[in-house]
Image 1 (spheres, rainbow, N blue to C red):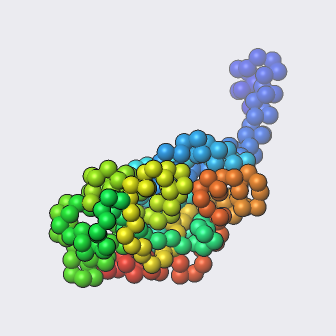
Image 2 (image 1 turned 30 degrees about the vertical axis):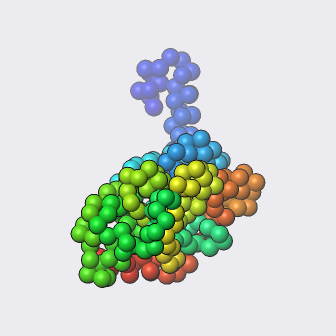
Image 3 (image 1 turned 90 degrees about the vertical axis):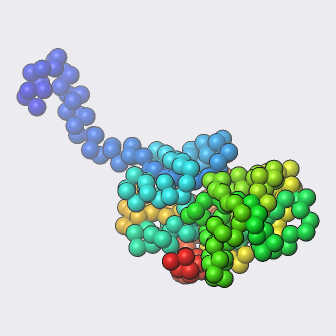
Length: 284
């Protein structure tokens, strides 16, 4: 301190002393909370993300940064490497890394922490009634680490001794469920598999798009994509969980939930992702 005092103008050293005393205690409130997102339903909802960011900042008392990447794998790697505090992931990457990750909160859709995979075709296709009728045709997946957008179909084929690479004439990834719907609607694919929550939400916000598709079948129910963190994720992850749990209890949070087409968030019940884990085992 004597050196600082000699180098600074008279009185300025006092400001340095005060900063040294206050800074260690002020740091916690300025460390950002980093949340990873993938192109599920939010890929074209920039204005909503700004509102949600502000809401979470007000509830956690910390700056919030949404980190968006194209694929589940990219977000998962950021989380595992400690570059994120939490991420909204699909259940499939969660069960793949469940020895390193833990669920923080799971959304409630129609009152339950569950959703389905939808097999869709173009609305003009009035005859296709099952996946078998899409054999030898072009098919759209959303992401190789998506349960509804890949695993459900591939595991079902594998159980019958088949594989998507040989079953379809051609398949490709769109890297978002919205783009699966768009690819089928525009005739780029004869069929596709999509998150039922996303299709239902789009039916409210963009009925012209979903109206050009038809749901052929719905899968069984699976655990809804959760917010996850690393094991022993620390206080930042708990701040996020508490803010999410409280969204359904205050007017601002309720408005945001309606925009998400969700009822709220809850703690994941035991065994919620066991059915996805069983599908994943079929691919191994």
